[in-house]
Image 1 (cartoon, rainbow, N blue to C red):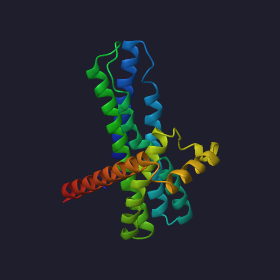
Image 2 (cartoon, rainbow, N blue to C red):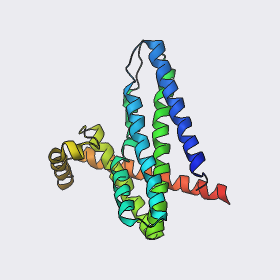
Image 3 (tube, rainbow, N blue to C red):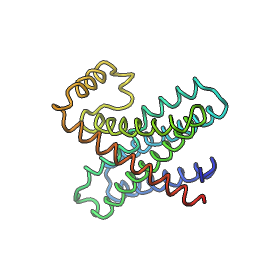
Image 4 (tube, rainbow, N blue to C red):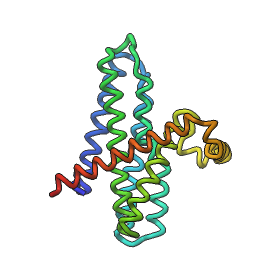
Length: 216
């Protein structure tokens, strides 16, 4: 990785502070709390980033079971990071703020979610490579990308979230089983899963290629 741990977290703090400022400024000027929920979405986007860093730390110390548990939890929360892209659905003209400001705010938060996603995925790749092999890591990236695409579908259209695996496991399992076993009926699920999955995979490859070109 180009960034060591200290600079990784400096970068994360910059994103958090900037987006928090943008949202708080909007709420202060407009005297509304319409975009307040984006702060929560941003918090959820950071969790897999932190979990992936912990997984690398555990993997380097050969704590296999703990690393696997940390990776699974990180994958569970990972769709929350690119999910923020779909919050662009909320972009529309509103009387209380100029459209250009809301465009900046939503794009900034969505981009930050993507950056946290790719940062987390790079660390997951590193942890898996450390404990197993690069081949397993590359295969895992493919699986995680499409699982994230499917997670975006579950969140945006079925309104599930990562906590439902604990709070509503039966409902979540039934919906997952129904959509996966009847893909021709759930064409939106197929479209969102495939296109978002490919988008995330291509984005990951681009980041990896840029990282390699800069480090030479």
